[in-house]
Image (cartoon, rainbow, N blue to C red):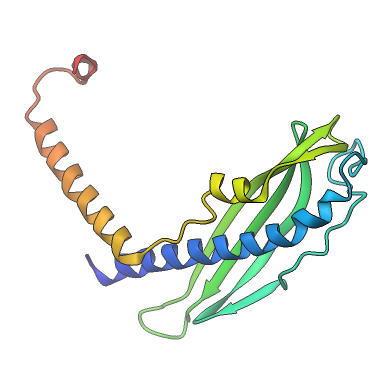
Length: 178
């Protein structure tokens, strides 16, 4: 695997792990605050105009080795009678001054269901924090070596499948019979 691809995979693994870590911190901070609002109207009918403002835990910029992550978006919203947290991180780092350039930008974004609303306004119930974390995979920690091995295995199998496909002489419509 070439160095540029390996660097991209490394960045993807790092940013995913960091995103999961920060989201878990935010959820652990705001979920207990929301308990006091069960049974109360926390949104207006017009959408994101919140009656309840969350004091989010993380600072807007989070430094890490070789760059920083900026929280671009972190707010409560209503969506189809669900209370959701919209969360977006932008990772920046590297340099345009070096050759080859090492600068990068990576965005990660999730909409996370936290509970149920009545008429997109009144908080009816909150979901269990541990279930939220598990169902969205925020408890997953990616391992770089495992990811590289899985990608290499996939590439080998894909090449093998393409080779087998090239031997088929009938129309691709016939694949459905397999």
